[in-house]
Image (cartoon, rainbow, N blue to C red; front, top):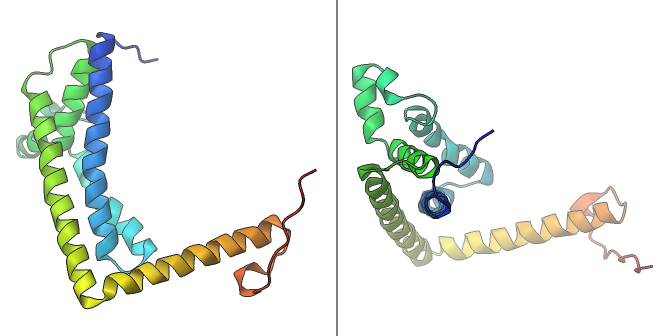
Length: 171
């Protein structure tokens, strides 16, 4: 199994770096989710770009084992910087510049995609699309909740049967 080779403070720092990076990429996902027309498209578009970034990094193999042209790309990849910095911190090694580069990537991604998302929402509000999507999401959520309550009550008709469901009394 994995054992932390560094200090507790370094391990906490590595964990916080991973959380910060995850937060940064949540802005990318939010932007993509607002840019597409369906949940299925958001799911697909939200992960298609992530696979090449992950696989062309040092997450699985050292970049030194890659062909020269791919090593150059992988060394500039934000996932490589994150992976190298967090590994170094967890193992008690000096992360060097990778730590600061990973933080810079996380800040840059957050700033760019939160700004893009804000612009997209403003455009959607100006065109009335934001209200339309919000209403559709509210109705979809209500339909899912209604179907769930029918399933919990043993009714297999789903959300098409528009009748109230009596909740069983607690015993």
